[in-house]
Each structure stands twice: as structure tokens, then as C-alpha cells.
Length: 83
Image (cartoon, rainbow, N blue to C red; front, top):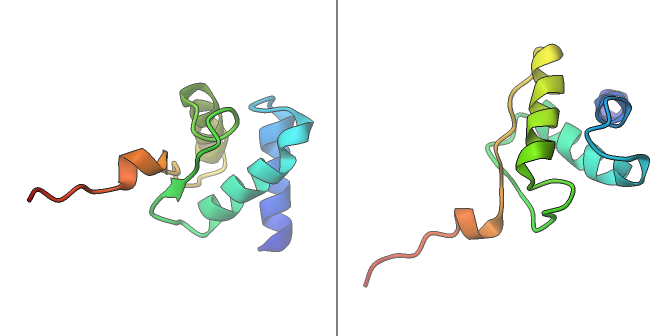
């Protein structure tokens, strides 16, 4: 799966979802996508948890027959129990 993750990450860059300097972020996203994780949780609001970037990742994933990765910020995941 290693090469697949790099290939998918390269597609994100080639389709200009993010710039070349964000390749490591793209590998993180592609690895999570290929492993069909339930959620990818990140504080990176510039390159990962960004509605416009997420739409780009989803478009490429759909084109490749892959899942639409559920990308969230930690604040959206933490559950506060009522006392």
C-alpha cells in the first residue's frame, strides 16, 4: 500500500488541492483513505481540516473509486458528557 499512498498523494498535488509543500499532509490523507479509517482528526486547518481542501480530496477519491474520508477537528470529536 506504500506506493499507492504516494500515488494518491501525488494526485492531490497534481490536481492542485494543495501545493507541493503539503505532500506530507497528502500522504497522511491518502494513507487514511486507503485504510478506510472512520475519521481523520487534525488541528491543521490550512491543509487538512478545510472545507475547500476536503472537497478536493473527495473529488479525487471519488474519481478513483475510494471513500470520502471524514475529516474533522478535535473539537468536533470530543464528547462532553452531561453531569
